[in-house]
Image (cartoon, rainbow, N blue to C red):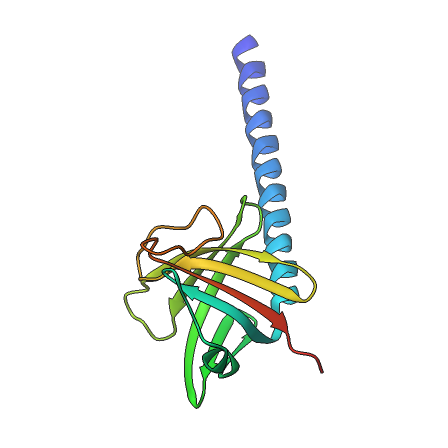
Length: 154
């Protein structure tokens, strides 16, 4: 009889734990959806530093970013680069991973980001498969890119 009661308690504990994990995953999923919704729109590049080298004002003016759903499209003049991205806003700092659209191997470029109402700051590895940055910097020799965007005014 005691073994039967113990079995019931164990099963009950497992069910409760599964429900808590599912609720936690649901909250994380909601946070991701909310963050993705806030990122949607057109962004204008304000500054970009690549491994310690800043882009010129002229180059900055040519770059726009459009985010819609999980698509991250960078326009440089008449060229477009389309990526997908995944967020984890529960991490400190928040993380973002990019993959080229149509890339069968799904190589990712890891990064971190901050999002304010009209400012999106992102720091990522300069090379596919590079190491995720721990801070927002792109000093010479770091192998990182740091970009700051402002939401385009309508």
